[in-house]
Image (cartoon, rainbow, N blue to C red; front, side, top):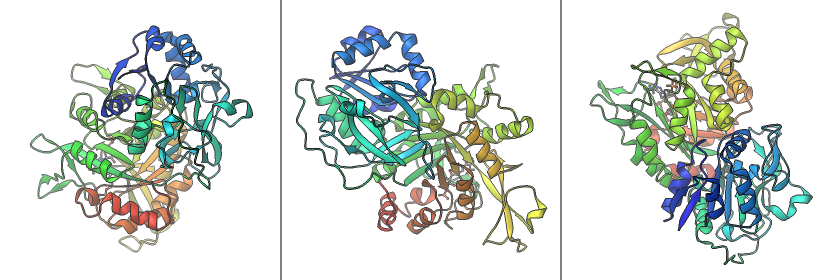
Length: 530
Ligand code: 1PR
């Protein structure tokens, strides 16, 4: 079976390609408007903001053939923003018309005490039968969006499934052979691959009568995420290895610690049940990701077998190479997305950007955060924070955001603030984490990866005081990172802070605790987990 893929070059559709191939089909790209009409089966992954998607469709002359294909009830599967594009418009891009197939506007989540964008694993409640969801048994599926379709009487005949996130929203639509999902089946592990398989094998003639809609008794709930992180760099022999710092020092007896191969470890963690996998190119601040191809290759190879979200960080900033050719942070991020990343993570450059902004008080629109967020959406932009505790005897000693800590400093100091660093903790800056994360959210970042140099690699547990301080400061999701030593530390961080996800590295690389064990322990503690 040849599946036609509508890739308008705006982001990571490599994972959709890989999922189709994994399911035994081959992929042909739409090359002309006519291909949209003649395709036996069309998949349209919507990546990027609503406005970007619609503008690319318009520029390519794809709008009329898409409308005609849908009117002729030819097999069509839309993913994420492609579901939203079926509507008349979206608050995300005022004035930009959608395909107008389904009446109504897409709106932004307006939910109290829930992080926006919704990033993570939630359920769906079927409201009617669908051959594509024949095999769906209430598993959690991966959502990553700030906008959603609304429930409305006039669009009842389109509504296939609903999801709860602060309020109920339409998470899947279907009419005849035309289906679209707000979630990403290609990033929803085995459950998602089964849904895709149904689309690939269900021919338009045999619309199977599926099992009656199973309405779970209560609301769907978003799960807490367990993320495996791979710090990657070349060792002194030039091999790209997964390493691990102890308070960011990755050398042991002079050698860069070598804990395994990036692609193999990522596949193992996916199979063990990791909800996301993060690669951090930890020397990206000095070499240039587009020059040293290995990281691109790692992403391309990993995304062939990892069907949960991949985040890549390290070296995302503007750069001028030895031939005096300059690249923007957007160029670097776009290369990472094309290689298979779903989210990019910015570290040092976010600190420099915030320092500039706090000095000038003006948004330039040119920072790495703004550029990438405008094109790919906030949900694709993670800011990785590398903070270090600075102890003070009293709050009066500093203008930075301090907290009273239960872990007194070396001279018994009762207070501390968290200093931001750049270059992998090598350089401290006169900036605290609250200034960094609040400004990054304002500039368009969609998630915070909150590391902690003091806890990194110590197996002593997460810095709960730091996480609570940051969680109170922003409304975007926060990933707690650094220090995990056992399953109880994950229960701790989910019960004692509002963190949306918890990340670990060392305990997984050293096989001290398996991801499955952590998830079982968290589930037994009554915490929602996939
Ligand atoms: O500054 O944009 O080039 O990004 C560099 C990226 O690399 C940042 O995300 C930064 O956090 C990371 N990084 C740089 N140097 C190091 C280092 O270790 N020398 N990794 C480094 C920092 C943080 C986590 C770590 C957790 C969990 N590592 O990735 O895995 O702390 O560890 P644990 O569970 O073993 O305690 P840019």
